[in-house]
Image (tube, rainbow, N blue to C red; front, side):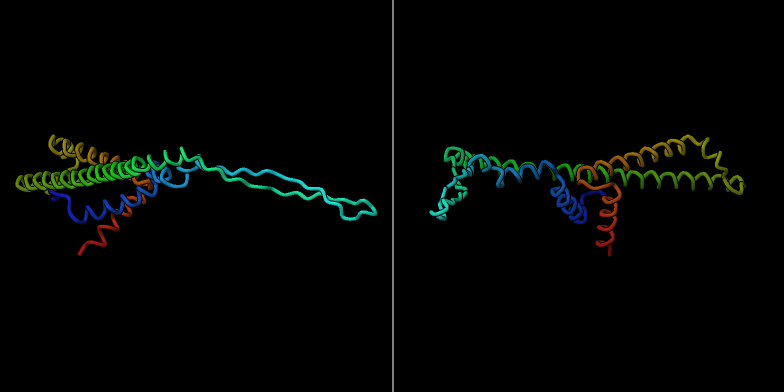
Length: 201
């Protein structure tokens, strides 16, 4: 029975968080804001065509024209200063966005392991109730308990409903975790299972 977040859980969370950053539109947008796009309005490039007429042969009055382009790079110092003043806020935004993404990964991962543990608890209770029922039947000289007898047992039925609910919550938690990370549920499940296998003795 798990009662705390282990080092293994933290390692899995870090792995999922790394993947989530690569797939998060919010994180990628915050990174882009710190890149070249931040300076796109501060620098402009202008190309102007120019032509010149030259004579190649005076006797035949042949002439030809030459064409070229001249370029001008203009920098807006006011906008440039404004960008540098905004840089601390942009870096803070990126840091905050990453932290928020990590919180989401942690929240959905914990919800998943809680749901998985609930399945284990309900399965153990189901087994206990079934064993107790069989023991009572043996004491009454019965060979075995019939399936219909289980359905008439209220405790058994209640546990069955709870087990179904736990399985449903586990599936929802997996879907939410996968959506947060940016992977399919199957890919996310594979990462979780492989991480457990790698760290098992």
